[in-house]
Length: 139
Image (cartoon, rainbow, N blue to C red; front, side, top):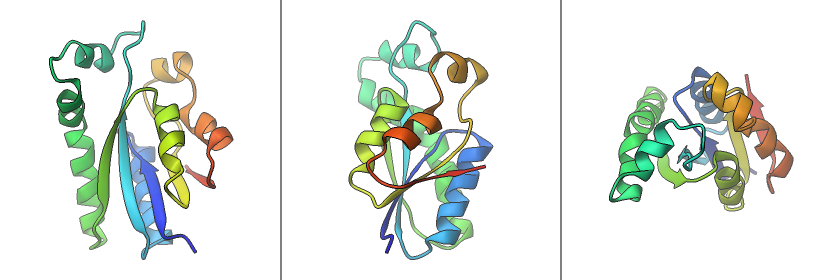
């Protein structure tokens, strides 16, 4: 029986679909939405801006607020409560590490921008290959 579900989420439509799928398929499970703020890289982007902040952890939480608020709005549509969490670092690595505490991971395909997919790698593929628990990839 699936009692704990991890749903990594960014601001993509596919991530929202993954959350809705998790809620519909596992309505009695404890669902945790995880947003990972990427680590600084040579590709620039949001993570570099966060790295310049005095309190990186607070800046990461602030950056995640909009996405996690959207997750709560989706959960409210289904009249359920979800937990939320924020991670910092390489999204795939953080997701795989956190997956150990869950029964399954449900995530959307092709999250992130085209540049992130080309240079950082496909998070869904990496999580699928390395997760210690079953993974469902939602299209």
